[in-house]
Image (cartoon, one colour):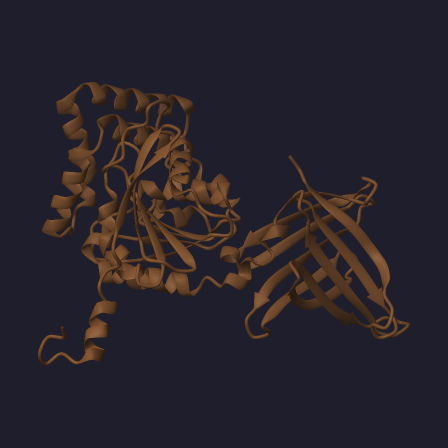
Length: 421
């Protein structure tokens, strides 16, 4: 029954704006169980990872907003929120990331965007590095850069201090106060209450274990393997020199002033707007050539070494750069990018002798095919290069040339890319 005075169109609009119904699951993983909340549906899955000593419902404002157009998943990290501490092992970043991945159980071809706060950023970067084919991008909130101690001795002192705090309740209380008071500056009263309540509910072993694990985490090594864009929305609670973006140029960043370390609670509308802009900037077409990213040994069909090719992702995943060194000493490099104005891909190649090749094209039947024409003393020469991903993980590259306007083609290069161990 429609309430009096409410038009049907307005009722439908109101229903559409209601938060998508949440389903909370207890998911078995090899080391125990994780509590996972799932809402909505869509072509993309947004995975929300909270910080140390927190819980997944700190993301409620974002889950409500983005479940209308996306599948959203929020995870309680091991020993936090409603997730049990691991039955065995510790709290190293890679261990926690493996637990999260097991809890997510993503489907083949599922497109993931990781959204992470504070410590959860280390987990997100580890996941994106381990599964670059599945992760389209990483949106971070107030994530620090490399916090590893300068020496092994320094890390040992930190570990000893944390172990001592675990056995001494008053000392642990003082540790939490020293850590959280500065970063709760500018927090709303509700934010402070939520943050401290989640911290009290967190396993002491989990909180201290994650702190210790973070001392071993190398963000640079993870970023080197990530294909998609990485963005860090920082607050004034973080020393600008200590943010992730300060030490790594591949990380884009912006500052959100007037908030505590928990902007998703203090300023949810601003965080939602920033995340929406980030998602709008991820073009699925930019991922079409990701199968070529890697450190490769290139061979002919008989296994003869032809050269080595390092293909890297840069500018937040918008560009692929090739670094070729042939077995006979020739070198060259190319830039490859999806160009929206062309509705296709363009490659610009230049070799060590000044040779230039400009190609354009796109995906055809699962292979990347680009063509171009260059002048020569004997007339224009057409080139057609095809990169085909093979079932065994290799990539085959065929370069054909034509001097009669494309009527006939001759093979110029036929190489098989094999990943180096």
